[in-house]
Image 1 (tube, rainbow, N blue to C red):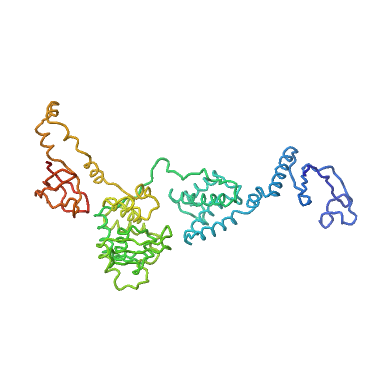
Image 2 (cartoon, rainbow, N blue to C red):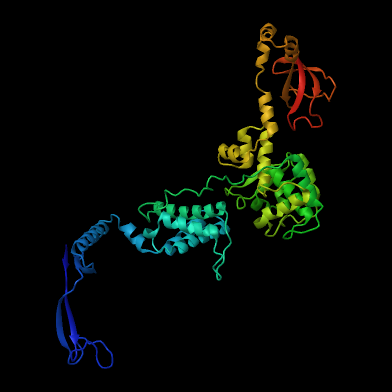
Length: 481
């Protein structure tokens, strides 16, 4: 039951004044005070009788119609709370966002997130909430968050007490991802009726695509390792030889910087068949332990680096992984390699791209990369070069062999020249042993007849000699019969 009313305004005066000579307010207990009624209050009040019999009085507005609507809403909320319908949202809405954020921090830790990840995520969320001056859930709005993100990206160079450098678009989106994860958790945990930021998407670069990561060629990778090995400077405790072994391991395993920082000599089994390296679940991104095979050549190259080291000591200790991009770009500059679009994570891209070029199946590459989906493996990490595209085009069927010389001569072309070209073709092959093709020819030499895709052929010349069979596609001229 609820009702509107305007209470009478009653005051007490002493000698016509509302305050005593010493400045105290005159009340009905003041000796000699006189009660004075000055009509009704201009403000409407509401009186609500709660289910337990208690009477609740609330101050409303000076407008009667608006006060009636507010009172009706209060009555509805009281009924919902009485029947435990919506009462939870009302109770959670009265709690501050800082209290909810503390619960969210515990939630992330309970899910097994690393302390560093939890601290960084909470710091980003708090930066947005404090920048928008949000206190409770119902205050969160996409427009306000967008304004705070703009401030984050621009930085605060004019703030002498708390200056902040300008941040990249990718970093700004990390802030957005963090706060969106928080509001989504509020909704899923039944602390909010809906996710207030559900419709927000990542910030774009106004039509200018950010520079994508690029993989390294084999020559660039060798030059990087050689330059690091011969370097005389030390980066956060890592000598040139340490960095050379680090780059070699990263390119041979595809491990991330944080995963490499956790490796010890005990993590490697270089004498195994095949050689392998193990990662603890506490170091991997998906929190699952992994055992990764490595190439025999990589294992032989790492053997001297691991010799005479304590089994439990970190191979690459320190905080280098926090500035891994700065480290590798310095070595790239010394090696004379273009550093644009390159950072330490490009070594992982190089690893995945090399696996694709080797002819490994998509499932194999996905497993070695420890990706959740093949779409991530092929769409983001696999890079295609011009030679890869040329190899694919050269494998298309030769449709010209189905056209008769007479038909070609009737069009005015040189039939003899066309027939000569029809006797030879350019194909891309790979060196395999066993029942598949074995490449024995060198430039200008004729090798034995063999079979390519069911056709008897004779290898006449190798256009690109000097590569080991199985390491890359070789372009050859073959006569067909």
